[in-house]
Structure formats: structure tokens, C-alpha cells
Image 1: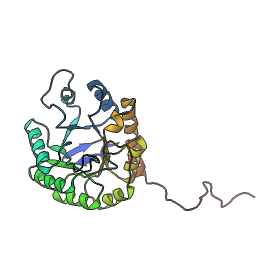
Image 2 (image 1 turned 90 degrees about the vertical axis):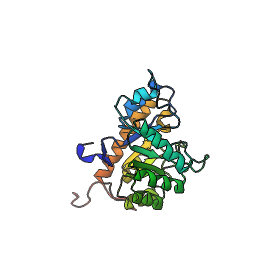
Image 3 (image 1 turned 90 degrees about the horizontal axis):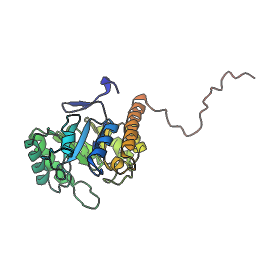
Image 4 (image 1 turned 120 degrees about the horizontal axis):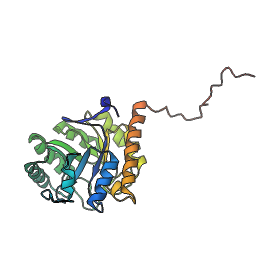
Length: 259
């Protein structure tokens, strides 16, 4: 996309609207291939599942330390506001930037977020100067509360994490978009490129995914497909779709036909 259509989050600006994760790949080399194919500029890392101090040859942090990507540390695996805040404070001390993904899980089976704990953690982190992107339920009320707290974007789920079920509730996403004045980034549940395209066609500003790429038979090829889908979905949204009609509408005009 052109410089006139950048995704702006806080003080950051990105050309790519596809954010990707770094979990579940078979090797660091496979991770690198997928990241490069995706064209993503933002890469999320689970702070509690990666050794941030490991900068040895062939390590994930050596790959991400190349400065080719903006690292988005996330708090996956945290089940309380205290845990999430503590984790991100430690990451900041290690020199990771202030742009963070807040994730406070409320249920280990569905991995749905805990709204109360997410809101509590967001308040603290925003006050401490973090640029907060919270993972949340596709609930317009929760999204508005997170925006009012000062979150730089909201990240409602499309479906449960890692499920690949696609966008289950486009109606709620439309309501969230109508009421939001910050970017809306679909997070979790995307399975195939058409899911990503639909999210962008609805008007969502970006999409974050991990499992859909990492568990594909060919992760790099799937990453490329997701990249193209996000681009196509965004262009379709900007172009404006034709109106839906209950009946047929001839492609060729009927007036002035030669008898």
C-alpha cells in the first residue's frame, strides 16, 4: 500500500497490516522463512515461552534482534493482571520497546480473555507509558472501555486462539468498528486467507495470526497467501463494495436495445 495508507498505532506507522507470531514452528529457520514471506513488520513474541536473553547463534532472539521487525512482546500464559504487568515490566528492563500486546487469559480451555483482569492491567500499563494493544473478546462494550483507558488499539478475537474457525461474529466486529477511534486488529481464530480478507473487507485495520501459518503444511507459502489476502481485503474495503440486491441486476443495460 502507499504511504497514504499506513497503519498508525500510537507513535508507530506500518505499511503491512499483517502481524505474525513466532510460536509452533519446527525450527528457527522455518520461522525466518515464514516471517519473510509474510511481509509483516510486526512480530509478536510470547515473553513467558521464550528465553529473551538467549542471543546464541541460531536462536529466535538472534533472528528477531536483526532489527528487521518491530517486536511486539505479549503476555500469553498470564492469568492475572499482576502477572501480565510484571512480565511486561521485566521485558522493558531487557530493552524491548514499549509497544506491547496485553493478554490475560481467563479460561485454559477456551483461552478466552478475562475482561476484568485485562481492564485492570491496561490501566496500569497505560499509566506507565506502554503502548498497549489488548487481546479481548469481540465485545463492543469491552473494546470501548479499553479505548477509553488509553489503549492504542483493540484486538478482538475472531474465534478461539488456534482454532482456525475464522470470523464467527462479523456483526460484532462491525459494531466495534463503528464505535472505535483507534485501530481494530483481529486477533486469533484466522484459519485461511479468506478469513483474513474478510476481516480487512469489514474495515478492520489489521490482523494478527500465528497457528494458521505455523501449522500449515508449507508455512512460508501460507504466509505469502495471508500477505496477499490482507492486501486484497484492504483494497476491497477502500474501493467500496457494490450494494447487495435481493434480485438480479443485468450487467448490460436494457435501454436502447436494437430490435
